[in-house]
Image: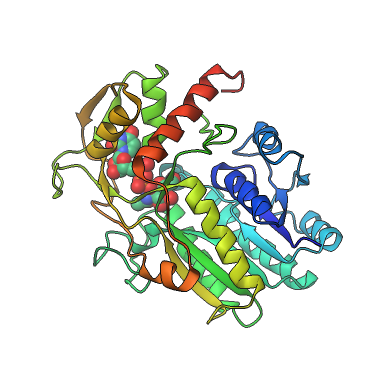
Length: 340
Ligand code: UD1
């Protein structure tokens, strides 16, 4: 029998790609999603890719009763926990909503895992825990900094909560850098609701004519071209990292019951390099202007990937050109669709 893996937030951007990667690796993914920031069309996309509709339950991770019922019915071997809010600016405006959902939801999930005897979890963390990093590339051992936003604080608190529960719960804590791109088939991808906050959906919507022009947030930073540097990672590579983390949990090959890995490529790109890269990859111009710095932006951050390569045995395979091409193919598909 296939190992069953519960994927909370399994219809979201990273979740949907991970569901497909789990299926391809021989697992049986079971999706939980409350559809607060995702759409059922993601399930259609997954179905088109894997050939059948995986089990899906419209459950909120704050709903202890529903979670427990599902866990007892499904008897999963592990949980991958994506379900959380992720907009930095919104978290500043609505901190309680973020703490309730991201921290409260994690606590409820862990309580129900404990009650039903599930011991293994993969947690979505973020490079935001390093703040403006004290060393670059950033290692897993690089000091974390006080969070700049409630969103960042919820990721730090999540890590602490999981670490404090390591007597019974085994965690693979994945600190994502900047996930972009989409499945090469363009069946699944990112579905930002409203005006996107993140660079790539804003860029692709601009090229698609939905937005007038992309604003580059600041060009006077201490970087080669003055714009911020990030470690962009293809969402399919990121999904595959989750498969490696689940295998490590189920094989019990971890060295510690709480382990942290950086999930990045190890390469940094400036905002202007991303724009030029997109123009080269697609042959399409990106209308853009230089604007003011965005409050709270880190100047430069990219990952040291030695630990994840040597210990988890995972390495990003897809380059920036592939990420940008796939992001554009997804945007073209979205523009043709009614639910855009
Ligand atoms: C942020 C969060 C990260 C979170 C991620 C996903 C921080 C430090 N980072 O990443 O934890 O996981 O969002 O929600 O809190 N940019 C522009 N113009 C735009 C949009 C972005 O120039 O219209 C620039 C930004 O200044 C930045 C880069 O593009 O340099 C990437 O920005 P973005 O995609 O928003 O991601 P982060 O802020 O790096």
